[in-house]
Length: 242
Length: 332
Image (cartoon, rainbow over all chains, first blue to last red; front, top):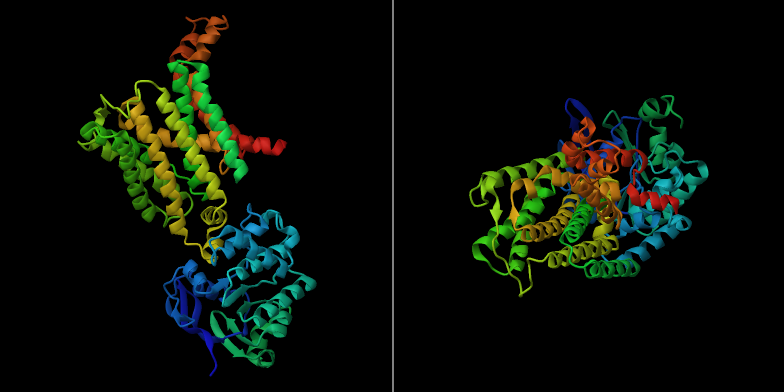
């Protein structure tokens, strides 16, 4: 039987009269790389904020690893094994790159020495070792994105929610990040992936959900999605850079 | 970490020798006690303000909690003064816990405003309760500890010095611990901190408790030292502001910044309060004692230390946003 790690059931999120997420349901299998795409304002980041406890949901259920997440705090959700990155990167600016990653590692260990060891390991994986002692705020955007990744990987998550981790990066940088994501998945982490870059999404994802104006427009494999006429009309054909 | 603790030990040893070198001079010793107390208070505030970035504008509440609890316990039961200190810590921690549970739901400026509100509630309650002596305050006639002469100022000098050393050591230890890293993460970005598994309210409360406990000990020592307290002496908003300014002018978030701030501001306040400057100008013949300026200086300059704090703060924010310690770092 297929193991589902995350179930989203009829999720709604309203801001006053505005419906940001409308009746969205999907589920993510273990070790999948799951893509969440859609035009600007489709509700992708709002959905992430609901799943990770930053927004209270209006109605619906979020079940992760057999636990209901609805009323849990972000830090509890992190300890359950779900970690996220931020579309607008949030480096802990005056701390060093190494210390940033140690903050992530502290969710597993309380010993400073061990946290440091684990952080160095993650910096090696994403290729930031040379910047370990630099203040995180001083990094250029491409490296800040890698730092976001190293920091959440240090929490040893079962599931990783990546919010436009490739946004603003050039092709080489994007490829490096995608390689890291693949190897993380191969070690057993499930990944949910918000992305604008269609090439990145179709090349890496096993399954994709398309959101439009808060509603689920389509779900399927990358081939199904790229051939779906609704998706092409709403998103790919809508003047967007594919 | 070892290096920092060694420096603290050396500075403390040097400070411990000062009263012996200076000899019996109550005036100078009094000013030095004030410096050590303000250094300890600003350092304790720095644990919450510097590490966690939570600027409390109501730390007088914890100082007053220590002072009042100690005085009430000592004047009624006359036990060992150390019991008074412990009782003060307990009361301060209870206030901190209640305050923290409520106000840490708020972020940013709201926390600062709420901390003022809590301090004012504590002050006004103290002013109106009977067991706190109301507006009259509390006078302590007799106190003794292990046969030490508590009429001398020296025991309080060493008491405040010990408190400062403990506060600085805790700061060093925090800087190298998970809690310290977590608090800094909270200061830098609360959303990022929460998403990395940090329970924001828990760690903020932890910092507040440590800070409040240390602040209350300073209040207890002060109360036994002066032997008279009322709300304007130990619970005033002015005290809260002085603590913050000392930390900001010295350098928030640094180990020695609050100490440097106290070493600079306390003597400055003393000079202005005792009107040394006005007397000096008159003595030098620069202004006549009977002239308008002379009278103004004599009458009003004594109240000018608060104004001076204000001016220094503005200058600091404009030119030394990282405090005086930041200046040295830049030069280096």
